[in-house]
Image (cartoon, rainbow, N blue to C red; front, side, top):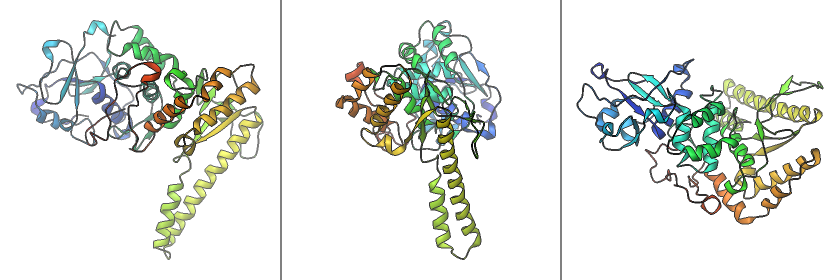
Length: 406
């Protein structure tokens, strides 16, 4: 993982916060270097040996697998004592007393380099994130997707990766810590966090449904992510099980997010352009036909999925990218979801419905949604008027090249 000249073999250091988050994202997405086990360790005291001091050039020599050299990024370092704090340019130090956190709260990357483990990382990041961002980050760490380490919103997403922690492990870490900055915010978020998120946008929708209105959520109640639903009535082309993205617990009501990646329409556009540029090339025509067929098969499977779930008593609403980007679009979906819950259960969703009529809340929620979707929206939305002041996450547009953010 780390590539340094042999003379630096005795070096040791521990990265935390945003630097550790970028490293974890790189580690999870790098299938070529994928490890079956994650080695846990205690904090490693910084030691630049055989050099006498830490410098920006030494950091630049280190390779955490990031697209940019580490020396050009803001660097977060964890140290075991105040006397070990680094004075190098661009370094932000955090001092940890090992007795304040559980044993082996860090991950050993080898070659003397350690990073905050995912449980500690969730707590570290919690104080600088708003409630929706905390849940989205928690879903990522406890789920099977990983964002891009440098451009988390617009960069490529790694899907189908192994979860690096779980809600249970984060809760055990919080319970076993005497004090870490951010632990109060992390603890407050735990009741709304779920395992088994499969994609970033599914995670965002889940966070909005689950969180209370004071955090811009819809307060829909407990949910499950991607639960298996066995299909009892067999239909043509049916599968044994289907996995709706989100199901409201103890109901037959749920949500499926169908986004851009879901139906790969871009592949048809690319193949059509190639075929138009080379009308006589059989390979280009074949690629176009294959792209159309692939998207068609996926669309047919989606129709069958919805039909099979309906026949088996499930009411699953599709949510699209357009619903999320449109002002009030998600509110309209949730209104229909509340209707379905009331029709199929004994629940009274009047309190949740009343919050949908609050225009100021709807506007703030939409801003928060846009901030967590691909695009140029403002990051780190402050939810101050609803939950009190929050430290804002830096706007990535002002530190475009070097910022590692949620």
